[in-house]
Structures are given as structure tokens and as C-alpha cells.
Image (cartoon, rainbow, N blue to C red; front, side, top):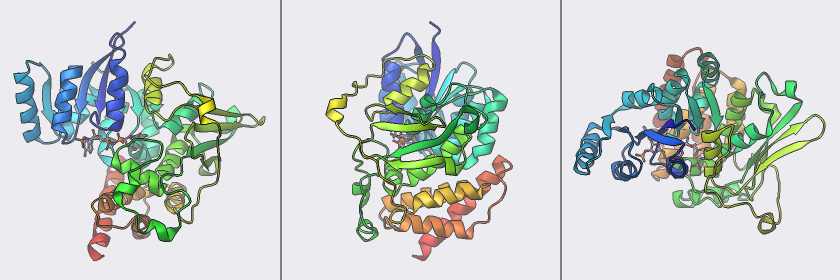
Length: 393
Ligand SMILES: NC(=O)c1ccc[n+]([C@@H]2O[C@H](COP(=O)([O-])OP(=O)(O)OC[C@H]3O[C@@H](n4cnc5c(N)ncnc54)[C@H](OP(=O)(O)O)[C@@H]3O)[C@@H](O)[C@H]2O)c1
């Protein structure tokens, strides 16, 4: 069995720790090349002790110096680097076979794209990177021969439900629709009025999934489903009208593909991200993920309902951004990141998140997303516009 070397970008996060759990179950298959974090130096130290990576990366030099000292004291040979350049280096390093892209938000774009351009197997959890740079990203996957495996449970499910070689448009394979399931988040069924009083802790308390705070808020506003809709369009060559969001509160069906002969193929499992992570690591083989087997008798029933886009306008905003094309999805993403941060800091109400996103969208011209510079500039301008709006409140 060939040993694969893996870089985990965002190792200290929810996806990062689940990835290390799966990797740790298969020492005969995988070695950790690099682990990265933003500021979580103590959790990263614990991970270095356990997984002995060749390289560890933190954002600030001060934190990197601290980690260097601790590792030297423990007699570990891990090299410690700091800064954004170092993220790119560990993503494209020659000795690396696979990269888990699990940094949250736009910060993950450059290292994820670097892994793609280096032709790696890229396990894509960082949906924001693809939302921002869709056409450019997918073009780079093709041109550099990267293997892109979706880790978002919905996209991973659809990937499993489609024919192995599914590029070139859904129609070619008799697929009529992608059914993207959504739990509906913690506030399913709530009125707009009640949503106005939601607190950050309530928003981060997801009924089925345990996730980082940003994606938890996105799940509560349904922006997560909107970002996933855009992600699905790029990953599977789908038009927005070919992706239907289906609220399925049990989160047992992770998504489905409908075919022209009437078949609907679904992927089911317990809501545990280690399943798509293990799939992405081992594809086309299967490995143990440490996930409990699905007990259908305990699940007992599966419910489905349409999403309430009046109470949760983020889904519509995302669909409109995808239809507008160009830099519109990057603007949507940047405005949402600023809004979620402000909400988590107690500076913005829950229902003001979509208001802020809509306001920034209205103020931002859409340009063709011809190159990375244009996309990054749209991101910066949208953040500026969002901060200006916040300052006026
Ligand atoms: N959690 C899930 O179940 C789930 C499911 C599907 C998709 N995803 C996607 O996976 C990605 C990660 O989600 P998560 O829930 O694992 O997030 P998370 O728990 O917040 O972890 C984020 C990771 O990224 C690092 N990070 C944050 N800001 C950074 C920056 N500016 N530069 C470099 N690194 C940075 C964090 O380091 P520190 O610890 O030092 O802050 C941490 O390691 C997101 O794009 C999310 O949408 C997550």
C-alpha cells in the first residue's frame, strides 16, 4: 500500500480535528505532512505531539516562536512556519499527495488554489473558496489535473450518486435534478419577528451537526445552503434551476440525484463529517471512518418540506448572486463573512445579516471574474462597503 502524505489546512477546526481522527485510524495509509491553524497554538501543539507532522503553520510569528520552543522542549522535529505564504507552501509542497482544505472563509482561497495548481488530491471543505472563484477554480482543476473531492456532506453525497465520470453537464448522464438537502437549521418554522431576537449562542446550537461558529450561523440563516447551491453548480456543471433545496430535518439523507427515468438516488448516513472525509481520503476505495452504522429503525421516519425563503432570504440572495455571475458570488461571500462576524460579536441582529448582504450587493457593481486579482478586489471592496454600513448603524 502506498503511503499518502497529507496536509491539513485548518487542522484545529471542526473539520480539521475530524480529519485527524480519520487519519489516525489508518497509520499504514497516511502520514501527516503539515498541520495549520490561525491562532490556536495550544491545540496545534497537542496535534503535533500526536501526529508528528514535518511542518506546522500559525499566522503570527510570535505564536510560531512559542510553538517552536514547546516542540523543541518535547524533542519533536516539526518545523514551524508563520504567515500566509507558509500556508501556500505546505499546500503545494512536492512531497504532499492530498490536501484537506478546511480553513474557514476567504482566507482559504489562496492555499486551496495552490493545492489545485500543484495537481494534488484536494478535499474541499472550504466552500467559500469555490464560491468566490468558481470558473477560475474549476478551470484550474482541469488544467492542472487535480483530483477534487467534495467534503461538504451534501456535495459528497451527490458525488456518490452521480456516474463516476460526470463532467460535461448533467443532461449528458440523464440527471434531471440535484436535490440538495438541508436540515433547516435550529430556527426552522420560526417567524421573521422571532428570528430578530436570536442570540449567537442559539444560532450556534445546531440540532444535528457539530460545526465551527461561522458555518453554524450560516446554517441558521440558510446562507450555508445558498453557498452550497453555488458550490453544487460549479462542482457538477449544473444550472441553478437544476438544484432544488429540500428541507429534511433528520439530516439522514445527505442529498440526492434525480434521473430522467424516474430514479432518485440518495446517500444516507449518520450526520458525522468523518464519512465524507474518509470517502475523500480513500476514494475510490472505502476505509473505516469510525462512524456508527446507520440504524434505520431508530431513524424511523424521513420528512421533507420546502425551504421558507421569506423568513430566510439568504438562500434567494445566493441564487441571485449565482445568476448574476462574475464577481457577484465573491461579493455575497465577503458581505456575509463581515455580517456573521458582527453578529457573533453582538454588533448585528440575526435578521440584519441578510439585510447587510443585500445592501452590499446593491452597492457593488458586478464585473466578469476574469482573474484572481479582480475577485480579490471585489472581496476587499465588499468588505469595505459592509464595514461602512455597520459603522452607520
Ligand atoms: N464543520 C462542518 O461540519 C463543516 C461541514 C461542511 C463544510 N464545512 C466547511 O469547512 C470549512 C471549515 O469549517 P469548520 O467548521 O471546521 O471551521 P472552524 O471550526 O471554525 O475551523 C476553522 C479552521 O480554520 C483556521 N482559520 C480560521 N481563520 C483563518 C485564517 N484567517 N487563516 C488561516 N487559518 C484560519 C482555524 O484556526 P484557529 O483554530 O487557529 O482559529 C481553524 O483551524 C468552512 O469553509 C466550512 O464551511 C464545515
